[in-house]
Length: 183
Image (cartoon, rainbow, N blue to C red; front, side, top):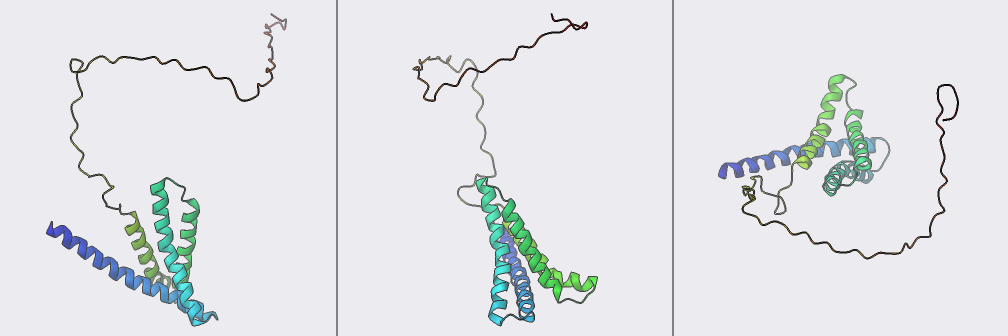
């Protein structure tokens, strides 16, 4: 039990370190790009918060919608859009080379991967069933059970509440033999 707690603590520390550093880099790139294009400093931070936290919120929303059996298409499209905005901000000020773009994209990709891993982990709680199935009871044999009694309850007749529709017209088809005469 202690080893599981230690692993959980290590995972949490790693999650916080990666999330904190990748999030800080992503926030900074969005902020710097916004300011470099003429917006005031506070709007740069507002844009960074909006872009980066929307990705987390939308991931949580997708998880909640899946749990509720609701469609996720629109929310997934929004998540893709905000992820692309974050990635574009990472790459926009990078050196114009494959390595420059790759290195600049790492914080955003790491942050998004971390959000995906955390949000795809099944939640644990009292409502969740135990992973160990309960032992099944043996099926009763015919000698253990009594025959079931069937009870018939008459259903009262009801009168239709909707107006009656006019009778449908029928189409009569004629059979034709090979010679073309009616049969």
